Each structure stands twice: as C-alpha cells, then as structure tokens.
Image (cartoon, rainbow, N blue to C red; front, side):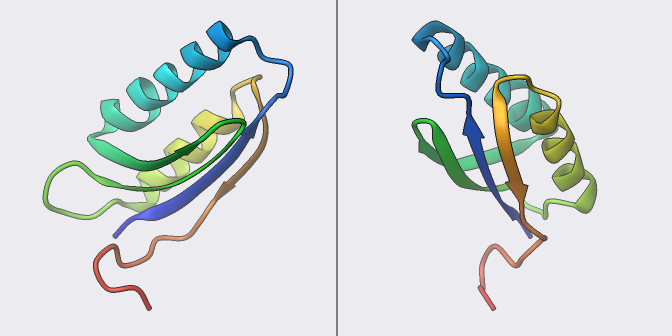
Length: 90
C-alpha cells in the first residue's frame, strides 16, 4: 500500500530556502519514517509514497506526512491521497 502526495510551495521562496525545505521533507517526513518518495517537481510537487522495505504504508504514515506538510509555512496547498495498492492499481 502507498499514497499519492501533491503539494505546492510558495512562489517567493529563495533557492536556498526551497532546497532546505525539500531536504527537510525527505529527511523528516519521509526517510525518518521508513518511507520512500518517488516523484518531484519544482514549485508544484507530485509523487507516490510507500515503505522503504517490504510491507505497506499505513494510514498513520499518510496522516503524518499530511500533518507535516500542512505545518510548513512554505506550503500553500497540500493534497494527500488515500491508501492504494502500490503493486496492482485498481
């Protein structure tokens, strides 16, 4: 199981602040929770989150990532999808 994540960062961020935010997102919201993120973007990011090792992402993972993103002042819009089968799309 995994989930889709979309977010948009403020347009007025400097490159240094933007880079620091993306590093923090990957380190704190993703890697620190045993997750992986596949995706990217520039000011609008979109990707898929699943667990790093065998297993499934949980609703707790999904809620944590959503809360983390919503708590960041650099973010102007967040969408976190429902859990879906990461191997066999419906």
